[in-house]
Length: 214
Image (cartoon, rainbow, N blue to C red; front, side):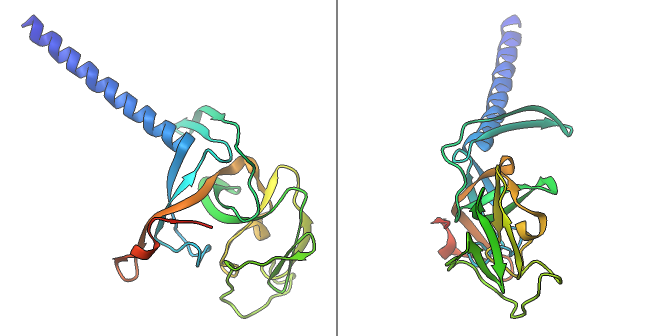
C-alpha cells in the first residue's frame, strides 16, 4: 500500500513538473524566439492578406519576456537587439494608443529622417521613394486640411522612434494619424507566412504558404 501511494505521488510530481516545464517553454519561446500572428485587416494588402498567418522574429530587435497576471506586470526584461529596425522592415508592434493591441505595418523611416507625403507620394529626406509594394485603391486625393492620408508633413522622426505605414496606403491607420512609433513598442519582424486562409471562398491559399515577407 505504501509503495503504491509513493508511486502515485511520484507520478503526480512528474506530471506537475512536465506541465510547468511546458508552460515555461511556451512563455520563453513566444517571448524570446518567435511568435505566431494572424492578419486581421487589409491595411497591408497586397503584401499581406486577411487570413495570412505569420511567424515574427522576436530576437532581431531584442527579445522580451513580459509576464502579467490579472493585468498586473510580474516580470519584464528585454534582451539586446541584433540590429535596429530599418526602412522596409515589416514589423509587429504594440499599438501606441492601446498597447494591448498588436499592429503590423512597414517601417518607412527611422530617427533623424524627414518624412513628407505629397499627393500620395512618399518622400524621405526629400527623396521620392520607390515602393513597389504600396497600393492606392482610392483615386481621390485629399488636402492636408481634410485628412493627413494623402498630404502629410514634413516632420522629422524623433530619437527612439520609427515611422510606420501600411502598404495599403488608402486604408491604413498608421503613423500619419497617431505619430511616430516608440521603438520600445516593437515586438518583432514578420519573416515567414506559414498558412493562409481565404475566408470569402472558404479555401486555403496554398500558393501563399511558406513564403518570406518583404
